[in-house]
Image 1: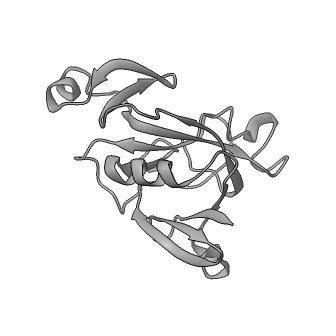
Image 2 (image 1 turned 180 degrees about the horizontal axis):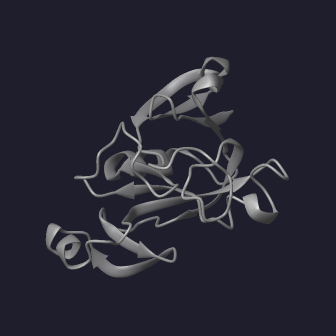
Length: 166
């Protein structure tokens, strides 16, 4: 069985199959830290699953707004024109919380918070918290992950104290 483990303490994402590490990718989680509340700009913890995969077949650096491709491809010039945009690029793995009251339903619903694993500009730092709540990846890495996992894949997002348990 495939599963994804995001280790916030290490800023890495592990793809695991039958308890064997298949791939390890550097990521960037929220600059504001961890938390489940709506509007917190924090990365939610706990058990999730991939609710939807968006962007199959799109070119690398495809820009998404509202989960739809805009027709733009990310470039430094485009970034200069929109300096405050939170760039969601290439592929989106939309997450849904699995723990009612913790990361599902009400004011703590990861899906309604639009928490994704998604591509980011090549200039975006990985290995340090810098996102607005999502899990950012390099574009080539998010394509690789996207192509390996089906909808429904479990995703565990662990904080430092939980890393030894996975």
